[in-house]
Length: 281
Ligand SMILES: [Zn+2]
Image 1 (cartoon, rainbow, N blue to C red):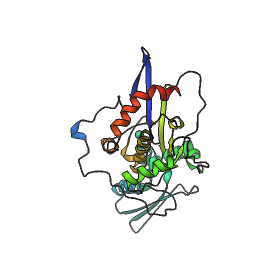
Image 2: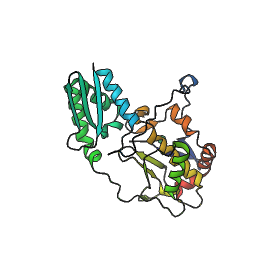
Image 3: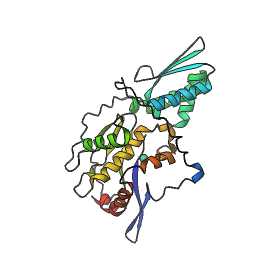
Image 4: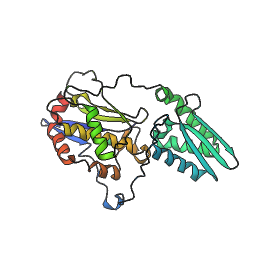
């Protein structure tokens, strides 16, 4: 999961594609619900040489949920252990839990079940988690060493763009990987949607659509997509509202940080003017 700069064109009326999704369909949050200044997400960065990448903010968020359900001290470690997905032990009033990182971006209902199981040993919750691991485990546990990260494009060097965006907006601490996505097989007829970028928390990998590797696509536009996906990397999945199983709505805090990109308005404008061409090529 992760989400997504997705552009959707709905039924071209009179030849003019209508853009929905990222820009036009976004309901504006009423002012009262905007995040108060200074009350942003705690961004705690992982230590320099982690065994696995763990979003410390996400770990702490899960630890807090466990603490709320357990009458004692809770110590949570996030692991990459494929043979022991979840383990828990209680001794002298201290709950020690080790949980596989696949749960850091699991759906809310599964996280709730995880908390019920780990904090209270809830049997129903345990069965529910078992099902989830059975259904999704293969994919989530498969070693996803991205064998070939391709960052040098014909026209744009993603690594250089990533490093610039990381240094300028994230103090250089973002610890994600980036690659051009694979060119999918084109089906007959024009595309109706295109996902310009995506972020997978499990792989901590940003994928950028290869159609952006064109001479006519400005570098700042590619940078704006990288910036958007890096925000997904930096903000815990638990802060995102997930509709259904995949569509993610960006919270006001996300939108606010997104607007700090220096060419934000210019990028939106470029996208509006070139959506047709992006879909055709
Ligand atoms: Zn997004």
